[in-house]
Length: 411
Image (cartoon, rainbow, N blue to C red; front, side, top):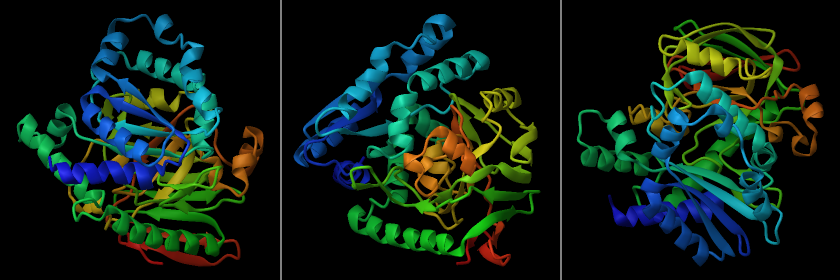
C-alpha cells in the first residue's frame, strides 16, 4: 500500500475523525491483522497530546473457535471487568475517546449455530449497555474506520489473489475516504459543509413523515419522532468536541417514530449480521412493526435478528444517502456495513440515537420512547436505497415536498 497515504489516513482518523483532545485517553479497538495501522493511530494520537493510548487487540479467528466449541453458558457470562475496562477511562480525569478499526471477514461465522451466535451477541450487548450509552448519546468522541484483510479483500475482489485484492481494496478505501489526493482534511471540510447544509434544510422543513418509493416494490411511509432533528457528517460530544463517527460517511439521518412506519421496503445490498450474509430481504411494516419478512439467503437468521427483543422489529434510524456518493460510484460491493450503508439510503432495526431528538441526550429511556425513539439491544443498518428512488416529505402544515428524485438530492 501507499505508505504516505496510510499515514495521512491514520492522522486524519485521529486528528479529525476522533479529534482526540489533550489529556484524553484514546482507546483503540484493533484487529490483530491491523496492528500496523493501530500503531500509526497510536503515534498520531500521542503526538496530538493524548494522555495515553490503550490498545485492545481483537482476533476474529480465535473468536470463531470460541463460538464454535465453547459452551453458551460460558460465552454469555460477561465478566464485570469488560465493562469497567471502558468505564474506568471514561470516568477518569481527562476522560476518553474510542476508535474502532474494522477489518472483518464478512462470513467469519458462516456455518455456525445462528441462534447461539445471536444469544451470545445479545448477552454481550446487555452487559456493555452502560458503555454503549456513552457512544449512543455522544458522551464521548467515537469513530469507526476500516482497513483491508486478506479474507475481506478476497470477498470483495474474488478474481484477485490475496495480495492484489488487499492492494486494490486499500486503493478503493483511500478513494472513497477522500485520502487519495493527499488532502483529506481539506476535502472533508468541504464535504461536511455540504452535508450540513442539506441537514439544515431538512430541519427547516418541519417534516411529519417521509415516503420512499422505488420500482423494485418499495413504498414505505416513515413517520418521524416527535421533536426529531436531522443529523449528518459530524457530531458534537458532551465536552463540545466535534468528531466524525463514521469514516466514510455520506448520510443525513434522524429518528423514525417507532409506531408510525407503514408499507413495504426491499433490500438493495446484502447485509452482514453476526458474521453471516443476509441477501434479498423484504419487510412489510404495520404501525411501526414488521409483520412480514423474507430473504433469499439466511431468512432464518433474519428472523432471529427480528426476534432479538421487543424493539427489534421496529426501526430506530432512517438515513438518506444519494446514489452519487463515492461509495456507490465506486461500483464496489464492500460486504461491510460501514461502507455499504454509505452507498444507499438505509433503515436501522433496533435502537435509535437519543441525539436525533431535541434534548434527547438528557432524556431517560422512557422519555425517548414517549417521543417515538425506539429502544432495543440491537442497531442493525440495512440498505434499501436505489438509483430510481423518490423520497417525498409531508410537512406539519400539510405541504408535500420533493427530497429525492432518481436517487439524488432534490433540495
